[in-house]
Image 1 (tube, one colour):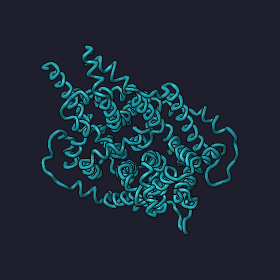
Image 2 (cartoon, rainbow over the protein chains, first blue to last red):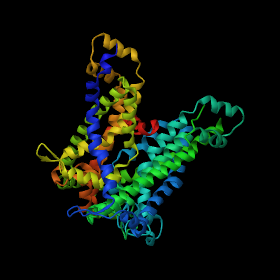
Image 3 (cartoon, rainbow over the protein chains, first blue to last red):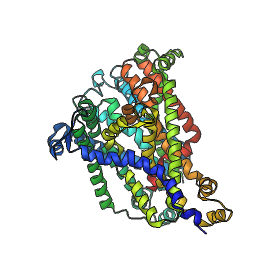
Image 4 (cartoon, chains in turn orange, brown):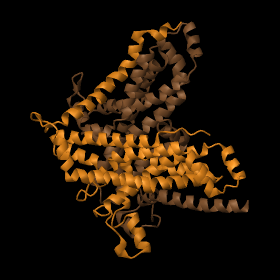
Length: 293
Length: 281
């Protein structure tokens, strides 16, 4: 009966293309990046085996520490500013009756624009002389309040965080909104009969029932902020004075500018392990409870 | 009732304010793209005094945007089609064919790809691409380097989504196909693929946007000016024109318009496609 579906040659033919690509461009680089991590190598001369030296050096590397701290700033900003804002806006969109579609489409617009373009756009907005932001400040406040947003080491990271939020928030709003609208009406109606008001409804019904999607948002924020790259590279490339350096920009500089391929790979491995540990901890904490309506 | 309508007013006000703050930069950029550099500084808020397209001409000519967009389109579509074909074939084999244990092992193996961020692998990937020769040609600095790598890194999420969909197709359909004398290829192309179309469209959009916007790999693998994709080309233009605001604004607008035009017509599918991976994950 099921002969065509139990033919080893067909089976292989259907799987081999995926397998070859996967083995060459994924499995091999993964293994090799661990391997390179144990060598000192400039890509031209012989590799020199150095054991765990790259990793111990990483531990003491001031710039790498700075980079990790900046990655954690990204994460903190995302958890403290982005996610609450996402939740607030999603709740509002779910409560209104008219123009829901309009708001949903509008907030999603920045998401479809490429990160490279967003970075260039914000470069223009942050310009000292004629950028939108400084011009607005000059309109409502004294001239001295205008800032060199991207070349002031104290402000550069914050400026990038805002640009990053501008691009990403819409994506999370759509996720969150879908989960809120998925809550069965009967539950809300029943609560209303019991005398629950709008505010209580948000805290005691909506928030607990969308826990799974909050968890997804948390997971995406954590892994996304640990590997953030494009926007930083185009806006400041880690500068000024490495005030915006993140792990991946540092890895690219070490690997491609100073040609320390071994050390660069070690940074890649460290990044991978950090992401794995953080997402592992998150999974442990939340334990993925299923919500039952 | 009156009270609840009052509440809605405040929310509309807040949401409208949010949308204005969010999208005003794009409107401002559009206005700036018609101004001269001096006008942008002197007349930041007003409409441009005249609609001249000089900036657009300058950006189009010096930035080579048309060429970049064409390159991006080619690489993106080729990688998407390849991903779709390979992922659908693999999903078909591991969801419909009768090798239970092997199926499960292969599925788990492919899902490993969702854990490792490609960002951690740039250095070995770069070395690998530089070292590969296919049919006597170096892979480095060709569009194929991007197509193959984009395809590989899109496979895990694509298999994940298509596999789930194919698993839910009832057995009766292919049994009928077998009685009609279809082989595995016939079952795949004539029965499973047409039924899976909604899932295929979703992942196509997801991958399309991802490839179209990809920046770092394209910057690492492509050195020839004439082969650059849109994001890399734009970044190069940005480095050269940092002070020439007017041209820069026009270039950004040119690169955004096609994306927004497609978004206006396909927003439901695009939103669905882009969020598919995370909802199901």
